[in-house]
Length: 335
Ligand SMILES: Cc1cc2nc3c(=O)[nH]c(=O)nc-3n(C[C@H](O)[C@H](O)[C@H](O)COP(=O)(O)O)c2cc1C
Image 1 (tube, protein in one colour):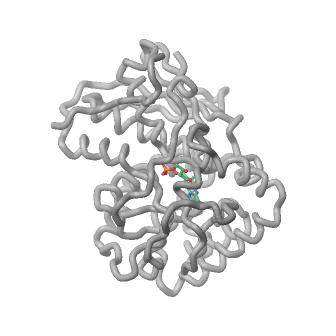
Image 2: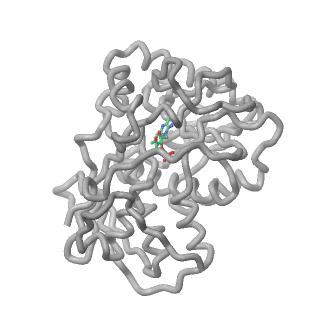
């Protein structure tokens, strides 16, 4: 089995807690994707547990007023940490919302029984670390096979959420919703200010979106958020046009904080499965940020659940886009 590298890319200052299994898991969870790469979580490692806290100072108060996408992002980090613990030979034990008096304490994670890591679990960990958002238009003639889409759906269901695969005849609805969401947010000065703050970030910022991971605007079936990059998006879009792209909606039975967190765990499971099968995932969240377009998505689900996130699924092409930066462990993990 390949050695596991928990390199934190930060240099010298590592505390004792960061060398513990929980510390290493929290460090690996830094790679979790988050809304606008805000990385809105903190870990506190104490008394043999790792506490996952929502970091409200990093909430997008215009784009994500209720904090739904913040908590969903934290759910991804939680699943990433559990995946890392499994890979280093421990059964992860998790309690969600362990303290009713502390709503921002989202979960407690601790080390359960020792466990012999399987090759699949080790691969899942490596896929988790190598995954990245791919915003380039997908290939013109190669689609994700239907059985793989069903596998993505199964990975989500295992975590207690659901995945609606958008049918061809439903695409115009998604397309109109995406256009509408873009118009509403670009006419909102608060939303624009937030996008301006979190995009256009130099790599040294270790947060937000850099020009290197965004492709210039191209015509697509379903328009994507442009992050207000104005001619300075650096990622080569390649020759794709999204003609064979699939679209999906992650949804949950309820619309409470627990559902948001569980949806994040499910999204992490989907991303790991997608990376294994060379499926590129581009989350599309403006359609769930705007109340009116979120309601449109709910109508596609025939009101069977609550939309949490849209996404585009395409066959991944090489070379992969660059890795987006992350905060230092010292900024995120306390002991
Ligand atoms: C809840 C959530 C919403 C997101 N919304 C979008 C989106 O609307 N458009 C987009 O291009 N990327 C979106 N992303 C991807 C993030 O921008 C991306 O994960 C982050 O910049 C880190 O980059 P990485 O995924 O390559 O590690 C979203 C991710 C999450 C978790």
